[in-house]
Image (cartoon, rainbow, N blue to C red; front, top):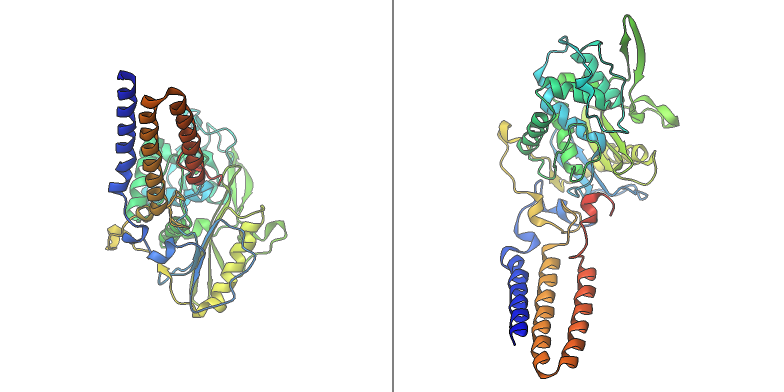
Length: 405
């Protein structure tokens, strides 16, 4: 009897735990999403215009007007995915304004310690003195993590810079973003979204230096003494490299790639006095990120000219922007920030868990009537619980947040 009572108490505790999410959760539509509720819906969001590219493989993308901030079309705009080097836009938004272009800095061995193995490097060497302008060219043109780390240390260290980047993201209301390192390299929980990356680009392009760096095609980089070597911007839409062809009117901004994140890109182009921003995350194929960006820009300047807004890029809090609510409050709606199961799915899962645990209590009571029958019922309940958990994903790691979904 003591053993049965103990098991019954455990079942009751399980019931209590299962009930906790139910009291905290609400319908997915109950809280407004940053930029508008439509940006949390599944499927392509567009209205008032047709002709969107049909062969888009990206897991998330967005087309927005850089001037008005209107989102013209989107697909999973708040889906949280690894950003790769596009996160360097937030690094620039945070640190760029702190140092004069002409300021000089002599790099030491300690400045280059701790750069992750496999990082993209521009070729910063200890013992060489660089101007801040040259370091930023290394960041924007060649996505150099070595240049990022030197600038971060000039800013007071990597940890301080990461904290400031997170604060900057919150001021920009980029609440899908979680910063782990300043360079965008693969780290667990380093996440952003197409919506947030577009916010970073729009804010950055207001800065003359940011705009100049991201639009620079080539630059001479110090090699020691009076020697230099040429670096070229890895943005294929800007340079026309790899047979892609330069995109007419492109003004930047930043590309990225890691084996975990795949390809990411935010591009901006101006035609007829109108600037469009497009972010594409994780398409299939190495050149697809540029092809799909170009296709979405073409749509925006063409058929998309008549599109009605499906959302908006919010303004920074420090510039008078109205405080919005996190997209994660609508977590799990198709295309939402985290890619986790929806609130309703959690409710369904919680209710199922309660029912299964209730069945477990019933089975435990049956044990008092017969050990064998009780054991059989317990095994059946355990199998059912495992099956239900697998179906709802409650016992799975969050594949979307790991970028492997």
